[in-house]
Amino acid sequence: MEQYADGFTVEYLVPVDTGASPGPAASPISSRTTRAPSPAASPSSASPEAITNVEFVNPISDLGDALDADHDDDAPLRFRTLGNILGDVDVPGLAERELAREALYLTSAEEPRTFKEAEQDPRWRAAKVDELKAIEENGTWELVPRHAGHCPIGLKWVFKVKCDEHGEIVRHKARLITKGYVQRQGIDFEEVFSPIVRIESVRLLLAVTACEGWEVHHMDVKTAFLNGEPLEEVYVEQAPGFTTPGAGDKVYHLKHALYSLRQAPRMWNAKLDGTLRCLGFKRSDTEHAVYVRAEGNTHLIVGMYVDDLVITGSTVECIRRFKEEMGAMFKMSDLGRLSYYLGIDVKQNAAGITICQSAYAKKILEVGGITGCNPCATPMETRLKLSKKSTCAHVDTTQYRSIVGSIRYLIHSQPDLMYSVGYVSRFMEEPREDHLAAVKRILRYVAGTLHLDCSFNRWKTGDPRLLGFSDSDMASDVDDRKSTTGTFFFLERCPISWSSLKQKVVALSSCEAKYIAAAMAACQGVWLARLLAEVRGGEPARVKINVDNKSAISVET
Image (cartoon, rainbow, N blue to C red):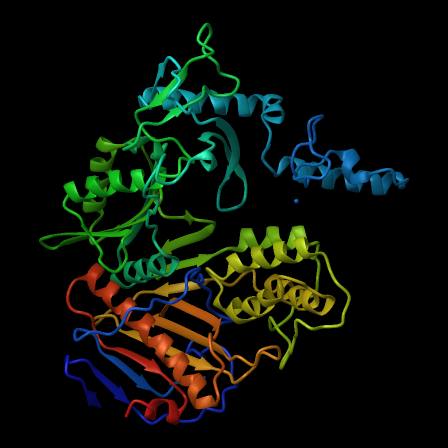
């Protein structure tokens, strides 16, 4: 045990070599029986303070766009007609009918990307009318004469189908947005940043909710960005297809924000932040998209992702009262108990909470054309070594990047893909056949694990404890000889944070590589401890981090 001047203590215990192979950090719960989301952002770089303890110990266990006459022949197609797909190939009738069904799937599952395509479908026309009605009811703009000093911004329509947790289309949504890319910083706008809740923060909230036996609810703010109030004078053109008769030369002066204005996210965040503060909430200093309100024995926590609010609290009554307060401020959609969030299926029951992305994973397999493949027991071959200098034939770069990017989102609920997906992501620039073979192996593993999910179980006694694991291999990258760090954190037995990243420097020994991994885990552990203390109240607790290298632990002694 070493005591520093500021009161921060670090306890080192001699590890027991478990003989675990290098790679991502081992965990006491098998990754084959647990799934959870992977943070998109890198672990926090927070430094330890006097209020936080970190204890290092040994491990306790081992494709298309609508085709029209104005389409650029060089541009990619996101929507394809049957003729585009079949081409001029002479195929038997049975094969042609099969391809026709595939063409129908490709064209119906995507959204139109041109105004002309949307005009041909009455569902999209109705969606556009609904969007304009919401804008008018909100008092977003007023029609004014065009002046020489005005630099109006153009508008365009974007279209999106909304799906449920099973992937079924439930709504056709049209959004009128500005061409914000023509705005100039320092002239048309200043600040643009708006915080959103990190995925590991969402998992921590779910873990706290499950452990405490609470419920977690979901609300959506309708036309959220229209509530922001611009600080600058902003003028926009009239909406395509909806020009006011007799006033075609006039422009709109914005009283509230529109989507795709560069400053719109910040304006909406400022509006919501002010509203929550007026309702008695305190914003977390660790995670600026998390708000907490404590009143007597009741505790209410809100996580914010743009216009999606994840709400949990000690009583159903305090959640209901908050919904009424928000309904009086904004036009809200009460989605009830959380069941689907950012493409993740959420189930709540008496035993706890589970999350999975089975519907999304099935879509990936369908697009990849391997729904009937033989599943694999592991996502990678043992001791697989790939190189950027491979002599195998080149493969389609766009296809490779698309597949890997799609699989990467699965890491949010499936940590067992963390290392393998990160490994194949290193070859995005110039993928080869052996790289693609490794990606297909991952897809086969996904096909065999569709039924698994990540569980956040309840506990009955005591305060929840943070438990971390860190590990590293040694010079595993054959191109630059850098090592790979793996970290994993649990709140009791609820997985909340994990990562697998190639280290920034070349480690000269296994001790150095594992020390770098432990330092990275310590930063993330401190950040998680602070956030946990803020959402539950009290002081940050000690974080125990398991390290399997005696030399790495001894470096600090």
